Image (cartoon, rainbow, N blue to C red; front, side, top):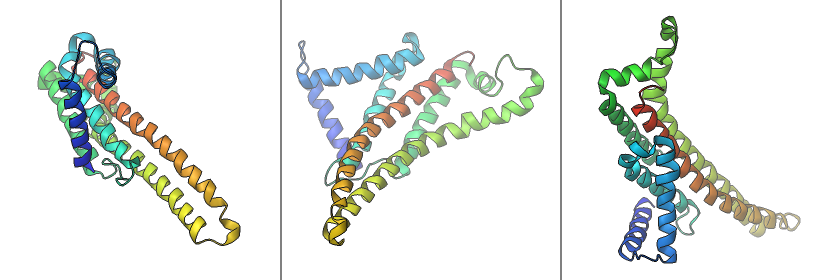
Length: 225
């Protein structure tokens, strides 16, 4: 499913790029809208126009890749999201983790990055005994872990709901006794409703992941946060 998603995504992007015109076609216009959405509404709004440029490629790749992997869960004959197994979410989270550590170290040096991350400014020094371990867990453990688990858990939950609805439909329509068969129509309608909802969740999870990535990058390069 992952290879299929990557192949389709790359094909669409190459076609949009090679057929780009001054007056855009409908497909080119859609691609440009999505690219501008990540560049303006995520990168520039969160990181700032001056610093966002170097991270636009990362954020755009993350957004489109996650959406492509997510949407395979509702495509007939594929029927499973590429992000519903933990390996891919972990790799994406580790990529983001390395990038925001590298960005912070490049901006402030190792010592400055650790100081900004582990010793929040404006806090009485005696509270660092409590706050510094918490900040360490948040910056170096919880951020990558929660990125991976949030993405995987949402896609697994949606997949299970679809399986339950359509499995119940098959049972009620073909195996249940006559009085229960009408309920198969309800589970079938529920399955289609959840399918539409899963399309929304696929886009939403890609958006949440890329927004959190931008927030982490912004925090790592800020002088104080």
